[in-house]
Length: 386
Image (cartoon, rainbow, N blue to C red; front, side, top):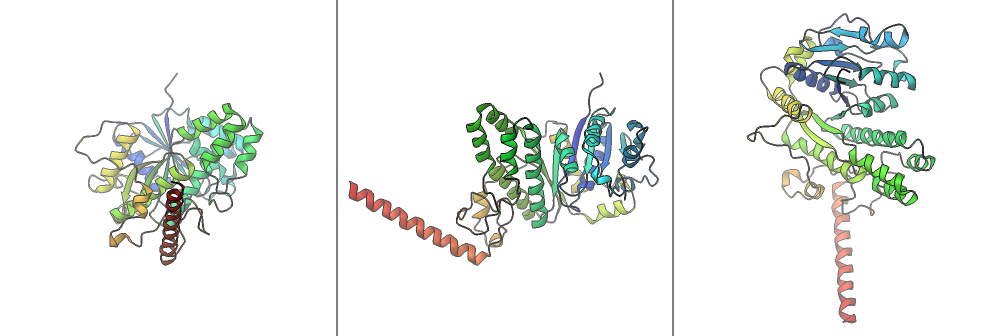
């Protein structure tokens, strides 16, 4: 039997954050390193990868495959100007293609896994429909892409939470009780249900210890990966670290921060000119970062000790309590580690705090005064007992 390909899916929820650019860059890097790669444009309504690769007149696409049952899936593979890189085009501007039936989606996922290639890179469409989420969860490695701005960070968190709940939902189809519990708290903003995923896991364990072990095993093994795109300066990397900690804090899953891609106007010139070879050109920080991520996290090569390692975890309290003046106005992420958690009217775990800075500081002082008063009372009562 031929070896099955390693599937990598790139998603993130919000459109325009650079999922297609990251998908193409990773594919180009793998192909340059001598790996056979098939890049799949899974945007079933607005595909454009073929034009970025300089394939102006693609042959058959996923639209033809879903429309005509007699078309073989391998016939969709299109050659590209890049050595070792093949392309399967999506459905550009096809009405209704984003709403394929469930059995069609399962069939497509099975066919992805049968392709004669070493790596399959799937560029997902925008949004959080079940198509995007199921394709994301079917991959061996799922990468979420976000930009350092509040809407993109929030949509990325929502995408991760919905993907996790979808995974749990499919895994517990044999347990109506667990499904009912999951359906009660799928709201990604935590505005109506403040229960953490660990609370749900404990409720499942108390109901049935075997189901509880399955629940804990799934969330422990569910690890999406994060790439920040269009970074202007190193301070914006803190947005990715905040998202990482919020996911670990609220969903109790680990998210690996692979790194970032800097903002470079030259890369958009290469996209407009349909020159894929210039996207990871021989110079620049983009090439260095993409190649490092591919070698370290996809090919699992030993990295040189001289190369700086990623900081994969940043304690949230360090982010919230940074004292340097330049960071005083830094956006806060809503989390159970916040001193005002449980004492705040917003309470939207996983997204940026909407409380004004002056209100936050005033409430923080009230909490500190209350805690100090309670501590003095406890000390006084302890002294009287003695």
